[in-house]
Amino acid sequence: AQSVTQLDSQVPVFEEAPVELRCNYSSSVSVYLFWYVQYPNQGLQLLLKYLSGSTLVKGINGFEAEFNKSQTSFHLRKPSVHISDTAEYFCAVSSGSNYQLIWGAGTKLIIKP
Amino acid sequence: DAGVTQSPTHLIKTRGQQVTLRCSPISGHKSVSWYQQVLGQGPQFIFQYYEKEERGRGNFPDRFSARQFPNYSSELNVNALLLGDSALYLCASSSGPMNTEAFFGQGTRLTVV
Image (cartoon, rainbow over all chains, first blue to last red):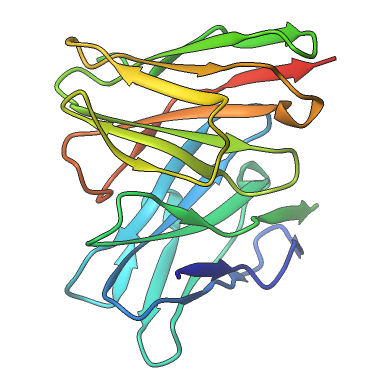
């Protein structure tokens, strides 16, 4: 069965500093990988996705993620965060044979002024 | 263009009651999925419908049911509500059956008292 682990429940970081949010998955088949962002009291917005091809994926709001098959990871990065990036970030995985998205528990990104 | 719309946005029900949540997908999207997000956790898959047929069901009791209409809108029904059903219920739509890109609505916040 597939599973997703987000290693940090909260990540505090100073404004304009770089950030990495970690995501590891377990799956025995090829997967699609996603990062979504959830602002308070809102739904989920897609940041970026990996379906195939280049392992470095660029998304919205200056975020990027790298698919590492050997380490089964899909970590999210941003070189310089802004106060508006304060939100919860979810990593999710699905496979070609599975219609559902499997989600991590989320990482709260806390921006310190 | 309108995104995924869900109604109502908030709902308070009493234990034992029944509730119906509604979702309208993005125009042209034929797939609708439902997720339950309990506070502090990632979403959990409930159902997926594609072309009005159930394509996937998560690990939820039979008190949960759903359907998709000819216009691709969808309803999620929950019978005999329990306190533990209190959650944010999210609807996602996508153009095809596979989860290569899901667009989420704002969710319905259900509180069971």
